[in-house]
Length: 355
Ligand SMILES: *Cc1c(COP(=O)(O)O)cnc(C)c1O
Image 1 (cartoon, protein in one colour):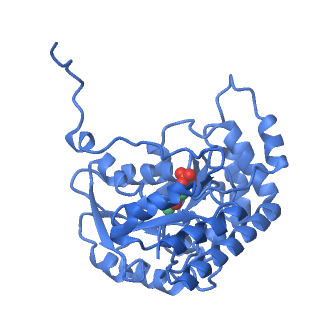
Image 2: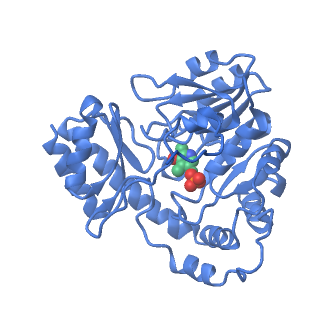
């Protein structure tokens, strides 16, 4: 029999491996591969989910209640807030709204795994600027990489998967250098875990008010523990966010996600206590690894970065054998999320065995 003819796929899309979910954790394993929150949802959040509107109805298209609530929290108008099914969705919307064939999207590398597919899907070109030897963004090199085709620069702080932050002073100097018609997306998915007082905080500093080309991204997936519900937000100039609203797939934020996000803001104090527990574990884990002799970069998210280099596959197999699901990046390093308390000593034991 001859092969059936398949629909034509864009060659640059067909050339990529399709997305496959990472390994699922077995009953005794700790899943430390996706920077999720190890805590069960708060009872008040579960209760809000149970009160969700009937599923035969569409959700509110603009997530008005959640936008109003976030607007109050940050002292901006609801129009300066945009909500989507995860902040990754907002990244796609902003890149689609700004970039097309021949345009360039600049980001650091290694950084968040989702970034390379953003320009690709839009038909634009990725420009990857290597991290410094300290696994930090090289903002000077990123500013120098701007051409008249650059439409977006994505800045990730703390950087996933390596961990270091960008300081307020570094970001301010960077914004001054970048042309005003280039969008700067400040991806602060791990902002709640940051303890370095010098770190940029795009919302507290209200950078987007002085610089309408800066959009700040936050998410309910990590610190707030709602990764499975898919809800994130952007704060920025309403005219820029309107472009994201235009390219968004309508009605993707479910009523359940919106209510759970509001209930989480209601319970913010309790959630931030849990964040403090994760931060304490993170610092203990990073310190423990350094005491063993690993050169762990400053860890300001809910994860640590092990520079396993050419031994990455071997190291990943050792974690796997110890029922620790981690995120290896072959030839480079391993990202380990800060999870349950009992996982910390197990991670340290494997890390010791690798030396
Ligand atoms: C996890 C993460 C996000 C957010 O993901 P969503 O679940 O889509 O909100 C965004 N940026 C970075 C760098 C992340 O690590």
